[in-house]
Length: 342
Ligand code: TYM
Image (cartoon, rainbow, N blue to C red):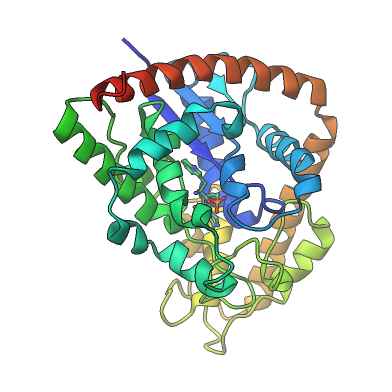
């Protein structure tokens, strides 16, 4: 029997953020270490997703390799042969399946994607690309090509996972059992061992998501930030004047976000963290402890990153890409047959 597949990918439009790490990299690396002997693990670079918006094209190739380096520095066990890491654009079946899925996706249904609406509003309708509009269907192809059942992602990807499930079910109803339908986000979270998928907020504007946006450097911790400066960002994070630590996203989003980062980084349960900090009135003590956890985490990550040998990565990419091409092409062929193209 084929192994059950766990899959995720992160765009390399800028350095990864602490939000990327806690929402997707950390859960994936944990699953890879736990399940690599029984499951197939695909942690890839969605480089075709990256070019849906303007990027530094000259630096893209280097950024892609840096992304893989980050995966490994965070503990992805690439020496395990069930772990695959690859560049999406090296496997042409991703683009080909996207086209076919496009033909089974409604324009209205794709138009409802909130991430697209948000981003296109920022970019402006005249400059937004068709690629950005089509991005969730490409993401569905990324998942469905490999029969991935488990897709650890942050909360912001909920709608895209739902769309993937809808497309897969629609296709299966019409053509027989072609695709594995990935689990919904709640089941995904349970698999990872958390209450729900994470949405880490900006340190400065805690009602917004922490994102790669360059317009909010004080609210965003990048994995390549100077660790001391990152600690300072925690110290100056926006909180409130309740003067009482309390886990409440509605009333105290700033301090709740810091509690979330604290429990996620220190691997404590919510209960353990709240036991320690709930109702304390000194935000400074709490921030200082979190700042030193963040500083130690970034220092260790950056040290690990410096040790990585690029030639090992390139070798792993090539092996993975060749194997994944086989799997993806086989799935693509079954789809082409189903719709009568072969
Ligand atoms: P991307 O590149 O925007 O983000 C990568 C991953 O990081 C998570 N994430 C966060 N999690 C918690 N808090 C945050 N503040 C935060 N910011 C980002 C995202 O939820 C995501 O899991 N479309 C995807 C990439 C992709 C993909 C796929 C993922 C392409 N194909 C197939 C899974 C499977 C994206 O743009 O994520």
